[in-house]
Length: 64
Image (cartoon, rainbow, N blue to C red):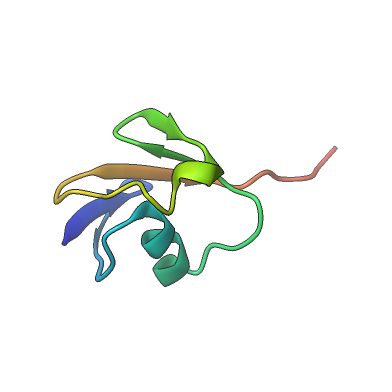
């Protein structure tokens, strides 16, 4: 399936947002949105992605 991850086209094998995060190597705490709608971490395993979905993944950064 083809999706857009953080503005970059990507081919993925899995079906869910959780699968995408694992395939893409994201770990730890991240915020996710699909087609500009926030998806909480508790719903990622059940959130099915569709061809053409736009996914944003943001990780918190420390700094000062």
